Image (cartoon, rainbow, N blue to C red; front, side, top):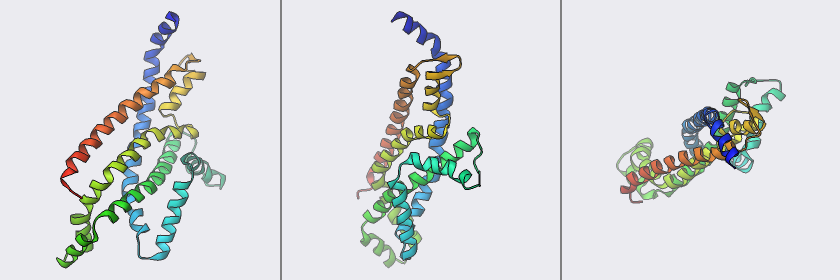
Length: 232
């Protein structure tokens, strides 16, 4: 037991350095997914509510496909699919794997976010929108001044759950060999940085996820509290 503890102590600086590199990749994927998926999800929600039936039908079909299939499968299709069809767009390096992962995550989470946005918009009483029309407001003004803030208040709790799930889902990117947090930890079970057969780094990644999710929970909780003056 003493030898095991001594070995872990000796390996700790090397392991933490590697995990920090992987965690930075995880953070980048998380941030870019949110930046892309939030506005795209809002746009998709508008399309799914469109009065133009073909657009509405196509949008809801795409949402059904994306929400109904595993994200891991979507990662494989987006990364390997273009190459199999003769159009290799990602390349074989880490940069290509990262952007393929980002595209897959943005599309996947945009579809989930769109349903949350749609339910939030539909949850605002229609009477308030009609009152805006009576006052001569345009549809854009009604959305910004009447619907938007009330919608945000409604969607913060379900959106918080999806954002926390996103943090953990980033580990799926290792299926296309993106060197994120879990991938870097798994490397020590074979050979990495002169260390082989070490499984404790894999368990230690839980500390990173717990701390980051704890911080997000606090921030999202404060946001929800700030919006509490919107009684809906």
